[in-house]
Length: 189
Image (cartoon, rainbow, N blue to C red; front, top):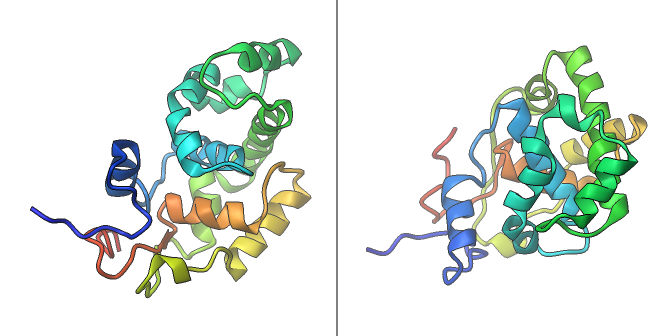
């Protein structure tokens, strides 16, 4: 049976198909999962998203399931351990960014109650569903991603920009940029 998916999905790659069908664009409200997804997005700077997806389990292991309370306590020894571990991108600045951003997220949790409250308040608690006839014409930034980027940079977040934040917004379902013909379009309104 034929299923219509977004044009960016590489049908010969089960990792991409599963990510598209089961995760991308689905509203995510769990703080641990939001921290993980945000961290993975920061790792993709200069790399393909598929490269990061393939290393996801390595990151989960290295960062103890993306437990904020643990990651905020990481030391130089932990950074060295992670850089020596299998399944992560060997970039000290990117690894340090996850740890630094974790500390910023703890402050956001204190101020807003949760990461979920912080991020989803930016879209009024509802997914923005965009009219997408062809994925090649989808914006890579928005006023909201610009605003979030400015706010997070003031909080000293690392390895972020409006494009990274917009990709995060798409991935965690704050924005539905599935193509109109895709079977996932509007499923989670």
